[in-house]
Length: 151
Image (cartoon, rainbow, N blue to C red; front, side, top):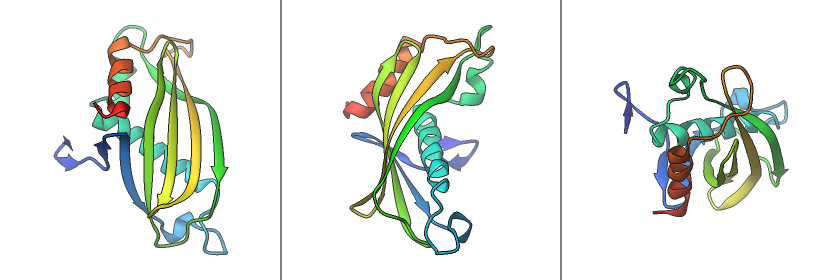
Protein backbone atom coordinates (compact mmCIF):
# COMPACT_ATOMS: atom_id res chain seq x y z
CA UNK A 1 0.00 0.00 0.00
CA UNK A 2 1.32 3.45 -0.79
CA UNK A 3 0.57 6.98 0.33
CA UNK A 4 1.44 9.65 -2.24
CA UNK A 5 4.09 7.37 -3.72
CA UNK A 6 5.72 6.51 -0.39
CA UNK A 7 5.42 3.20 1.39
CA UNK A 8 3.19 3.28 4.47
CA UNK A 9 4.91 2.21 7.64
CA UNK A 10 3.63 -0.98 9.12
CA UNK A 11 1.37 -3.69 7.86
CA UNK A 12 -1.94 -5.33 8.59
CA UNK A 13 -1.54 -8.77 10.13
CA UNK A 14 -3.97 -11.52 11.03
CA UNK A 15 -4.44 -9.87 14.43
CA UNK A 16 -4.43 -6.16 13.62
CA UNK A 17 -1.44 -4.00 12.73
CA UNK A 18 2.33 -4.19 13.20
CA UNK A 19 4.75 -1.26 13.02
CA UNK A 20 8.53 -1.37 13.51
CA UNK A 21 10.24 1.59 15.20
CA UNK A 22 13.88 2.18 16.09
CA UNK A 23 14.75 3.90 19.38
CA UNK A 24 16.85 7.01 18.77
CA UNK A 25 18.90 9.11 21.17
CA UNK A 26 16.10 11.70 21.27
CA UNK A 27 13.76 9.02 22.69
CA UNK A 28 15.92 8.38 25.74
CA UNK A 29 16.65 10.10 29.03
CA UNK A 30 20.04 10.58 30.69
CA UNK A 31 20.19 6.87 31.59
CA UNK A 32 19.93 5.69 27.98
CA UNK A 33 16.46 4.22 28.60
CA UNK A 34 13.39 5.34 26.67
CA UNK A 35 11.73 8.23 28.50
CA UNK A 36 8.27 7.12 29.65
CA UNK A 37 6.36 9.78 27.67
CA UNK A 38 8.04 8.75 24.40
CA UNK A 39 6.10 5.48 24.47
CA UNK A 40 2.98 7.59 23.79
CA UNK A 41 4.57 8.69 20.49
CA UNK A 42 5.23 5.08 19.46
CA UNK A 43 1.66 4.09 20.38
CA UNK A 44 0.19 7.04 18.44
CA UNK A 45 2.21 6.13 15.35
CA UNK A 46 0.88 2.59 15.60
CA UNK A 47 -2.75 3.76 15.80
CA UNK A 48 -2.32 6.28 12.98
CA UNK A 49 -0.65 3.83 10.60
CA UNK A 50 -3.23 1.17 11.49
CA UNK A 51 -5.96 3.52 10.23
CA UNK A 52 -3.90 4.37 7.14
CA UNK A 53 -3.50 0.69 6.28
CA UNK A 54 -7.29 0.41 6.53
CA UNK A 55 -7.56 3.25 4.00
CA UNK A 56 -8.65 5.86 6.56
CA UNK A 57 -7.07 9.30 6.25
CA UNK A 58 -7.87 11.24 9.42
CA UNK A 59 -7.38 14.65 7.80
CA UNK A 60 -10.09 13.75 5.26
CA UNK A 61 -12.58 12.57 7.92
CA UNK A 62 -12.93 16.05 9.42
CA UNK A 63 -14.32 17.35 6.14
CA UNK A 64 -15.94 14.17 4.80
CA UNK A 65 -19.42 15.50 5.54
CA UNK A 66 -21.05 18.53 7.16
CA UNK A 67 -20.61 17.14 10.69
CA UNK A 68 -16.98 16.00 10.46
CA UNK A 69 -15.44 13.01 12.20
CA UNK A 70 -12.51 13.14 14.64
CA UNK A 71 -10.84 10.55 16.86
CA UNK A 72 -9.49 11.64 20.27
CA UNK A 73 -7.95 9.63 23.08
CA UNK A 74 -10.47 9.52 25.91
CA UNK A 75 -8.68 7.14 28.26
CA UNK A 76 -5.43 5.21 28.26
CA UNK A 77 -4.11 2.56 30.63
CA UNK A 78 -0.44 1.68 30.28
CA UNK A 79 1.50 -1.11 31.94
CA UNK A 80 5.24 -0.46 31.82
CA UNK A 81 6.84 -3.91 31.99
CA UNK A 82 10.50 -3.35 31.11
CA UNK A 83 12.39 -0.48 29.46
CA UNK A 84 13.62 -0.10 25.90
CA UNK A 85 17.10 1.23 25.16
CA UNK A 86 18.72 3.31 22.47
CA UNK A 87 19.04 1.46 19.13
CA UNK A 88 16.43 -1.18 20.06
CA UNK A 89 14.05 -2.16 17.27
CA UNK A 90 10.54 -2.10 18.69
CA UNK A 91 7.39 -3.68 17.33
CA UNK A 92 4.18 -1.73 18.00
CA UNK A 93 1.12 -4.00 17.77
CA UNK A 94 -2.39 -2.54 17.54
CA UNK A 95 -5.71 -4.36 17.45
CA UNK A 96 -9.36 -3.39 17.77
CA UNK A 97 -11.20 -4.87 20.75
CA UNK A 98 -14.46 -2.92 20.28
CA UNK A 99 -15.73 -0.47 17.70
CA UNK A 100 -19.19 1.03 17.65
CA UNK A 101 -21.35 3.78 19.00
CA UNK A 102 -19.19 6.78 19.79
CA UNK A 103 -16.03 4.91 20.79
CA UNK A 104 -13.38 2.40 19.89
CA UNK A 105 -11.29 0.33 22.28
CA UNK A 106 -7.83 -0.64 21.05
CA UNK A 107 -5.21 -2.89 22.62
CA UNK A 108 -1.61 -2.03 21.95
CA UNK A 109 1.69 -3.64 22.82
CA UNK A 110 5.28 -2.59 22.36
CA UNK A 111 7.72 -5.47 22.11
CA UNK A 112 11.43 -5.93 21.65
CA UNK A 113 11.61 -9.28 19.92
CA UNK A 114 9.41 -11.56 22.01
CA UNK A 115 9.78 -9.42 25.17
CA UNK A 116 6.69 -7.40 26.12
CA UNK A 117 7.76 -3.89 27.15
CA UNK A 118 4.45 -2.00 27.21
CA UNK A 119 0.80 -3.09 27.26
CA UNK A 120 -1.83 -0.40 26.70
CA UNK A 121 -5.61 -0.21 26.49
CA UNK A 122 -6.79 2.90 24.63
CA UNK A 123 -10.36 4.19 24.52
CA UNK A 124 -10.90 6.47 21.53
CA UNK A 125 -13.86 8.86 21.54
CA UNK A 126 -15.50 9.60 18.22
CA UNK A 127 -16.55 13.24 18.00
CA UNK A 128 -17.67 15.72 15.35
CA UNK A 129 -15.79 18.86 14.31
CA UNK A 130 -17.55 20.79 17.12
CA UNK A 131 -16.34 18.36 19.80
CA UNK A 132 -19.68 16.61 20.35
CA UNK A 133 -19.98 12.80 20.43
CA UNK A 134 -20.70 11.20 17.08
CA UNK A 135 -21.40 7.61 16.10
CA UNK A 136 -18.62 5.73 14.36
CA UNK A 137 -19.81 4.82 10.86
CA UNK A 138 -20.85 1.15 10.91
CA UNK A 139 -18.80 0.30 7.81
CA UNK A 140 -15.62 1.59 9.50
CA UNK A 141 -16.44 -0.21 12.76
CA UNK A 142 -16.89 -3.48 10.85
CA UNK A 143 -13.67 -2.93 8.91
CA UNK A 144 -11.68 -2.38 12.10
CA UNK A 145 -13.15 -5.44 13.78
CA UNK A 146 -12.54 -7.63 10.73
CA UNK A 147 -8.93 -6.42 10.51
CA UNK A 148 -8.33 -7.55 14.10
CA UNK A 149 -10.07 -10.91 13.67
CA UNK A 150 -7.79 -12.06 10.89
CA UNK A 151 -10.59 -12.33 8.37
